[in-house]
Image 1 (tube, one colour):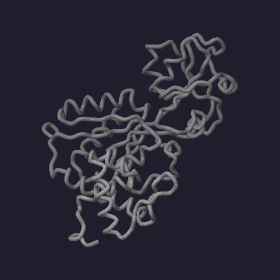
Image 2: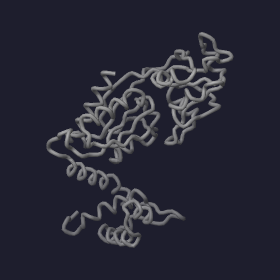
Image 3: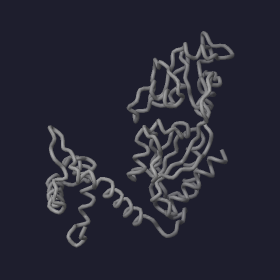
Image 4: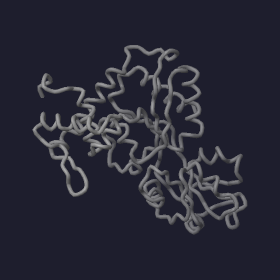
Length: 307
């Protein structure tokens, strides 16, 4: 590419068009007029000698040349953004910054409040935007739409076979799951057998960010087959729907403990073996040189190991 022939301001428009595959949506993403976005597309078609976007039926699709540009254009913009946003030094007490952190429900009891408390105390001008975990969490890190992800080390939850090479991770706390039922459950006394567990009606959390069914999420987490009669929007809702019912919930131990004094439930160890599970912290390698990002990572790791 001859940079003297290419308006680098068009890279942002090109990225939006390649991702949205639609002029209207791309213009809405960048808050510009549709004619302005159409003009940008015309300039890029002229430069690359390729239509980039073509109509297939009622939809627009990328040409092979357009497809080849998706990743390098996005990565170039993210590297520019990281370079311009990174300060050579970091003073927690005076730096203004916003971080987007994706968290799993398991991390919300204890760890998330501790993180926010320390950020508020040490870096009052840093703002945190918290998002609940979804199957697109890894993609959001890769595309620079999130800075950190505090999640379960369970690749199947993100429909991936391996973590992308561009992501870095550190292991935090072990995760234990328990079974929870109403304290006055009609058929569960002081113990819960595997046979009882299988026979009881199940409730499980299925966040809106997952396209998989509740049964499929159970399968990905525990490698077992269950019929889920009731699904709720997150694992945090599970203890709240047990009172006065015959449901059994499979829930992270920390979530059950958080609600144990608020709702009448009792818990039991899982009546079947599962492999070890841990919380992990994920981030993109492009953020590693950023002192503010490193400070927040180190804060989270230290708090997780203390808790």
